[in-house]
Image 1 (cartoon, rainbow, N blue to C red):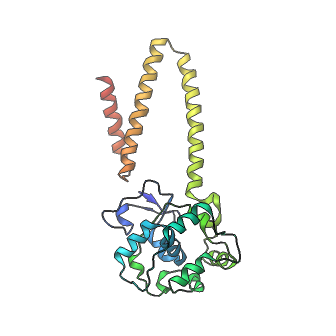
Image 2: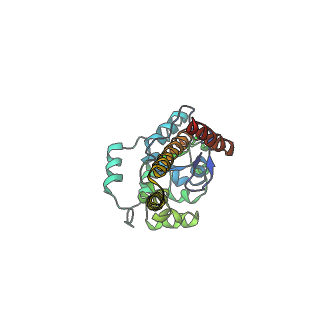
Image 3: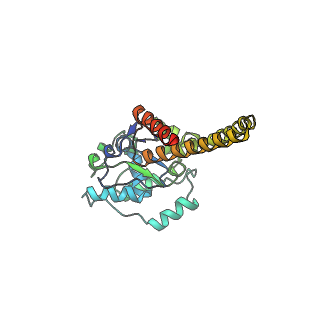
Length: 243
């Protein structure tokens, strides 16, 4: 399952309003479900203008040609990567620029639904798999800040709220746990006779590798691991170890 970074609900891939053949990009940074995109109209503008996968999914199912335009992907990529425009610049509003190209008006984004925007069927909006560090790219002009406050999504401007931030913390925590685990294991092995220590260490490594393989396969299939599957894994591992 995949968690939405805004509402924090969990979804199976087939329930994210995506094409049946869609596969999430391996390097996606965060997912925003289609319900949040529908709820917060400004998110659609950012997704359409910064995420090519989202734009392709949307235009594939949406025939409203008077609404659609194609951003300059090369210029946009340079802007995202190099910061050629400044989100903190109060005299510049990125959202206003994009809205004008789509014949929308910024005040309309204070509404809480895509239903209020012209020439757009919200039922055809897919979820977003952000590849860019989109939160750092959010406009921070006074009008947009007021909009975030009005919609109760000011947390999007907090760098410590993002999924990538928690992933980094998780990596640091995992590294710390691994180091502590290694130290504890070495101390325990030092107390055992050499033959017993070798057997124990070998079994420990095999179990760790088997567990990593087991959970990786389940994760790649977006499958929720059940208690019965875990019990079956350990039973199978025990039999293979005894054979």
